[in-house]
Structure formats: C-alpha cells, structure tokens
Image (cartoon, rainbow, N blue to C red; front, side, top):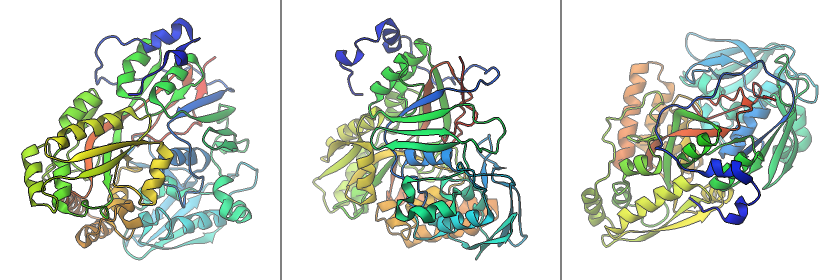
Length: 519
C-alpha cells in the first residue's frame, strides 16, 4: 500500500483521523448498507475510481472503467437479473427462441428515447448489434455463431445463428451488446467513442481526460421518475489511500476498488462498505511470445511458485479464497477438481529444470500503480521465485498505460483481475482460449485443443455436456500453465452514509438509476 504523507492529510480535522484509525480485526463477515427511505431527487454523486476510461465505443472497449461507464449511458436488449444468474428485460420486453436454437425474436419496448429526445428504433438496435457481432470487434467472439441481425418490423428484431448458441442471452446482457443511436454514430464516425448517445439513465456532459467524466440526468429516460440524481461524476483517483481520504473528507461520495486493509478504517469512521462476492478473480496474464514464456515448463515453474493460501490470508485478509481454476468460483460450470495448480516449490524447481532456462531467468511483471493488492501479490510471488533462481522485476505502471501495454502486446507478465461480465464462462474462456480472438487476449497463446473445446461448449445446449467440456478446458489450462490465477476476490466498494440505493451485482457492475442522496 502506498503511504499517505502528512501534508495530504492536513486540514481534514478529527473526522479524517477517525477514518484512518485501525482498530479490531478484519473479518470476512458480510457488510450490508442500511435500508433506504423514500428516494429524494437531486444532487451530484461523485465516484472515485482507479483510472480514466478509454472510450465510449463498446466495439473497442477493453477496460473496466469504460465498461462500467457504458453500462450507465447505454442499455441493452436484456440485463442480468438481480440474482446475477438469470436474465431480465431491458430494451426488449420479451423474446422467443426457436426450438432448433437458430432464431431469436425480440420485442422492443415502445416509447423509449435517446437522451437527445429522438426515439429508439429497430434500425438503431440492428445497427448496434451488427457492430457488436462483427468478428473484428473487441468482443465479437462473444457472438461468433450469430450470422445476421435484422428488422422484422418496427417492434421486432431477429437474430439468426449458424448453430445453436447456448450463451446468447447472457452475451446480449453485456456492455458489448449496448444499443446506441445509429444517426449519432454516423455523424461522428471515428470520433463516436467520444460522443455517446444512449437511452440509459444518464448522458455525457463532459470528459476531461485523465481527470473526470461528468454525466447528467437523461430527461427522456423511460423509467418514470428516474433517475433521482441530477448528475454523476467519475473522478480519477489512482491511489487507494487517496480515494479513502477523499471519501472521508466528503470530496467523494462513493469509491470503487477498496483495499481489504481499508475496510475497518472506513467502517470505524462511519462509512458504508459494500462487499460483493461474485465473479472476480486474481488474473495473471503472460505474453507467450516473450522468452522464455513460450516454454510450458518455464511457465509452470512460475505458476507453482504462487502461494495462493498466503495471498488470500495476508493480502485479502479473508475477503478472498485461494483460486482453484481460471474460472471464478461463482461462474457456471466451475470445477475445482481439474488438477488445480497449487503452491509447491519442489514442483516449481522440477519444472524449471526441464525448461530451456534451467538455471533461472529474469522477467518483468507490470502492476497497476496505486493498486496495493496487486503489488502485494507480486511481492509475495517474487519472494518465492527468488528461492528457485527466478527474478521477478516488478514495474508499477499507471492503470490506463498498463492496459494499453497489454493491448499492444508490449509486456511480459501483467497482474490484474478478471471479472466475468455474465455468469456464463463463455466470455472468459473465449477471450483467453480462442487464439482467433485478439491472439487470445493479447497473450499469443495458441492451442487448437483449447479453441475446439470453447467452440464445442458454445453450441452445446445440454448443461451436463457443457459441464464436461468446461471441466476438460479447465484441466487443459492447468496442464499448459497458460494463464495464472491467484484468489477469488470480493469486489469492495465504500460510500458515505447518505448514498442510498447503490446495488452492484455479482459481476461488480453498477448503474445509478436507483441511487439517491439522503439529505
């Protein structure tokens, strides 16, 4: 964790000291906010998060800040239900999937308008979804069996597939399937990612890159009486401690990416903590083109040196469990009995001795600056690797820059987290195991066996058979040491007591149409 200087704390008075006081023992007990009263209108919610967004264009989006912001500005045909596992209506009020699984018709909600007052049309839906399913887009693989999206009539849109597509509805609930204005997109062209126009509860007012994004209430929002807030400001505060300090002082109303070491500090000072168990996992990605990471034995030496038990206990202080699969434990078809990689320095040494670098090697690992948990993971890992002759060179890099280095494949190892956007594993396994999708998430991992399993599971409608395929795929990840996992993490948010109605789902996603500030 980065240290906070005295000068940064000056002027906040006794209230900030209460927030910074460490007392008691941190436990993993669920922390829930108090029940809300009748919603009140007005006010600005100021949210502190690690980094700025990259774009408002779902076609190219690859970072969490952009995803979460798009979920606030845009809507989709369907959304995840409140339980985080089912599907509920959004811009579609109903849908019908043919018995052969090849056609799906969606009935559009009537009377919906974009934030500029223009009506949502079937043409807008068709345009948006045709971009989403484009296999050249960042997330086109999510919709690979979709062969066409077309207008049936003004109230109906049809999706046709080349083969049965088990995760269709969950894929349509993701940010990648966001619906936006066709005419606005065509107006702005390659600058459309800076000028979003959606039907969500809020609309873009301004974007000061590297500083903040300001959203204002959509006056034409279809949910009567909502949103309650006048505006939402996403402020970039890269350091964990700085976000907590600003929450305590009142400069921020809500913060994301709360470190587990901060929970007692926040609750002792009267703050509200939201703990969301779900589909987030500690995720370590390797660029297989970087020597010696293309060598399976070298990778396995690295993998067996990750002390997941210590990471869960020391770094996450009970707010995480040691991971036993690349798939988060709350994901459908998760199987912890697929020969998971566990901490074993003897196995790490044996793997290293069989590799092309038996005497050890030095490799760089990128950690997002200001993220205390990822830095601690890297330090624990580095200490273990040093015992077998491998040097892990830790580089702390600004979060947006770190993601850009991954996207451009100018990295060796990157430590971050993965949150599945749906309860279905197709997204995670598709992006990591399908080498035709951005070179397997810019890892350059190439396995025909893995890709074939992804494709088979995607079209398999029988849950038992899908389970068998995903179990086989999880075992292959462990055998190849293609990606590493550390811990199944809780996603933690914190807010001032005045914040009401904030309810992130099991994927850690949030929107603000139901949020209000208690006066």
